[in-house]
Length: 335
Length: 303
Image (cartoon, helix red, strand yellow):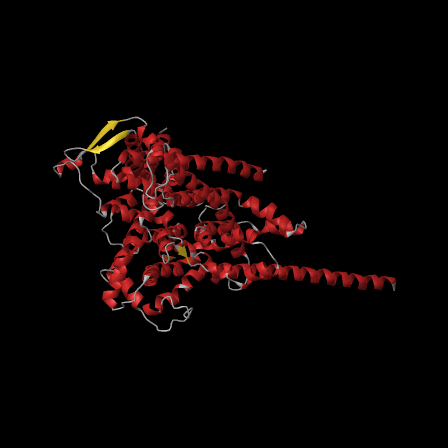
């Protein structure tokens, strides 16, 4: 009898404990869900809030009655924006994407080579070279902009240019060769970071793979291209995504070394600076016959431009995003 | 004997191939890093002008450029250099811990198991794209003089929550205001934390589940598990995240633009170079201090 009472008491205690536990867990879960939703909202809100601005007709901008649903649906802002940042129509976008892809391929190819060698070949001064990569990563690229710029204005390799030109130098500014050169020689956008990521990845590949291919009679290059590179697909895709995103959005190299290259990123940033407001508004008034275009219209066109600019990035991101986390896990950076 | 020699030469060949593989980087390092660095250094001690035949002329003036830089020269926005540097550094030191902690926080949230995780992750890493400078610039609103980003910030200041806090609970504005500013700048913070969140998330996922199981068996609370298991496991990666964040923040600073403006708008290449050198020194100093401090923390956690 006594035993039974204590049992039921225990049951009650257990029930309370379990309930408490469940409640606690539920509360924590609820709280973190609220946080997650809030953060998601914060991230998406700036983009969402553009939609009514961008799609409403220019006359409706600044109308306090219009908050989310435009009174009159209109694509004038879009048309104006595309006309300004894509002077050759869709070809400008294609060109910008192709540029980013081209630089991306070069960056991946050359960073992978350097990273592999740093991770796998114990050559003379390896640690020194690794230190150089880190040093390049640490120092902001802008700090050397001046001297780099001047060296491209007066470009000359050991006097070779004497053979081709009278002045003994050529001006490479506005020549896309500069950007290609930077990517090949490991100095493209964030390329030292890519080299670092590659070397961390290759460090973790089992040695047996290399040895097996050697026993099968493959040389250095065949081992690399036939065995190591195919095994490096995760890190290649990670670097490729990051490289594409950063090159497509780059305004630094393109702006300083190829200012007339008419990439979408540079056109976007140069067209829509506030000093250029009157030009944009005048264009809007004459092209689309909207005499009331105000500052608000400038913002609408600017943001329409940003949305157009984001399209290729969003496509790449949607395709590559899932792989990104998985791949980073295998990248060897962690652990 | 012969075999041994062959093996040695094979190894040497392997090393030579390795050097061939890194040679593009070595060439780049000399051409795009070492030479420019030396040149910048050299220019900074000279009065650089344009010669009659179009070349450049140099006149050695010692540290005069540096003295001028901090005494007579002003930035494009008419502030002194000393002020520019203090401002840049203080904003950086303020936002650094915020970004690091915030990205860890986002990663912890994204690492939980719940329905719709795929969508949440999709949104959480969107800042990798949205954080690109040019996109951030374009999303800001220029209307009304100042440039502000419509990030839903006015949603808070004008919201019922705020009115409730002020009117009903009598929370003084003095306390509420700083909190509101932080909340209002949250998009700024998120936009700078994209890559860091990604790195942290992968670090969290690579912690072995058995560690958590052991902690559970031993009866550790969630709080203890976090401090004794999670934090020590991600300490090394925190080092990387901090360094990356510092570098990223310095990349966005306006000092480089000032240097460019000095050199090519005002034609004072010497002053611009001096500014670049001071900038490099500043970066190295901050990185060194951060690395030293972090090393201590990392070591403590490894014990």
